[in-house]
Length: 294
Image 1 (cartoon, rainbow, N blue to C red):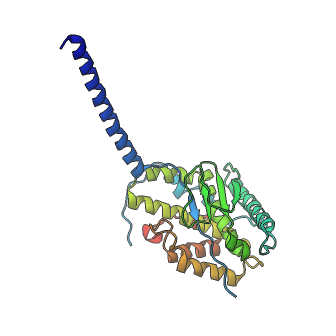
Image 2: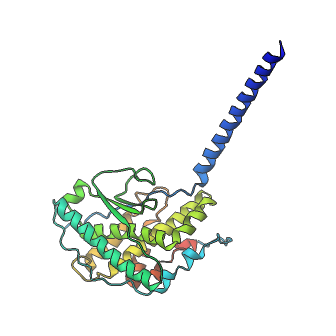
């Protein structure tokens, strides 16, 4: 075998080795990203159906944790009452349904803009996309069992109107859903999620689920403080609110088998806390013990 042939064989062997190493490296990277990725995902929530006539382990704080535990929003007092009155929501009218969603979103924009102004923080509105079927967002595939999602990548609330909801709408239920997804937008633009995603990147499975519950329960609490501004109106009657809280107590965890949203009684507890107190400070799920966000 001459030197030219020998050189070719050496080159081929080197190329094969390089490919094997590259493939191994790719597998490692993919496996690592699957377990520690902090890439934004859809934050999903269900809509409530209409009524029928332990000790926490001490850990070293992740840098930036004060963005979540000590947000300036917590010092702004009661959420601003903007006299929200989205009107009627008759059954069977897609036009009326869209109008209702837009009006509620406008109320949320006014209320939270005022709250951010109190905190001397910059504010920006989320986008709203009303859909009639599951879609893929920039944050990924539609979450199974969800009626609405918020994607932080495009800062958009995706709200789905199903045929059943169109036939039998529950105005308080859809308002609560919008306000929940809006709560995730508040987390995004306030910097709370800067801590959330940083912490997720270095947490194990149990830690990521705990962080997810803190996020979801805070969004639910933010939703409830908005609902409290309409307490006693035709939209938020005592009976309908009690029914809604009880529905979540019994059913709130059924759509989330990994317990990333919190147990039903836990969801109901944060809903009640937010509604009764009406302040963002009531919703500081990041500074509370883990036993309170089970």
